[in-house]
Length: 336
Ligand SMILES: [Zn+2]
Image 1: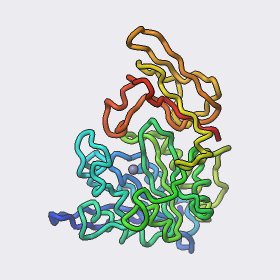
Image 2: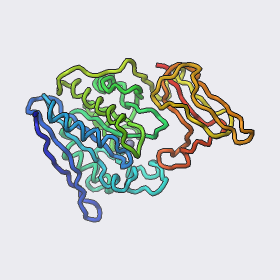
Image 3: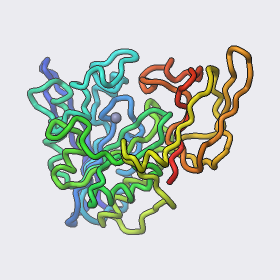
Image 4: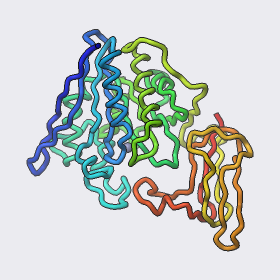
């Protein structure tokens, strides 16, 4: 056996005087090295990363050779208990309805702020400020592929993105809410020269072993990248890297939009799958003349987006309904 995990709790006093204690594991190899933070469930409906962290803790207890790991599987315990992304949201309310309680925008937190800011602050003080690297685990809807998000910094963040071995990498040039704080925990780390990446393990609301395995590979590869574990990283043949609003990247991005109204029947495909130009992607059953309209891949590449969906499909059921309007996006294929 290697080093043993110890359990600790942060403590945040909420506005009504009650206390939120956020549990975390700390594992110290006893040797010098990076202090790697893993954090999951900042959004209470994004829970795949919680199991990644549980499994990674077991691995570290056997294989951690250098540095230390700080593992926060439930960053936003009140939101997990609320079963929604933020503590303040009700049924079908999108994340953007209350950015003030969006923990992902609160770092480094505020001990005198709202309850979410107070919880974030307690985690920052007890964990984040001790750490030199960060892996932030999120999830988005099943209609967008699992992806690594970070900066194209020519340095540690980019090395971490390559080591993530996730098919899609989306470069994010600026923190979503501009420069300065409060910001995402990834921006907080990257702005201070400590590398961070975010992984979106699709989808939200469920825990699937296939996604957990991807998350475990990310965490293990990062530990190997930083010399914290022995062995070779397990990489993939090619990654598809894009930057939002980049002209060249848009040229290798091909959208499939619905030519008519009808019910979209998916082929046996998922986001991240490789498709060949001309490959069958599914069909529409028109609800006016009952015709079948087949859709095919416009290029060879990987499915970045797949399935009939509309805005807020991550928090509500009707936007996930396969009934499709003319012009709705059904698939996006990106060439590597
Ligand atoms: Zn999230």
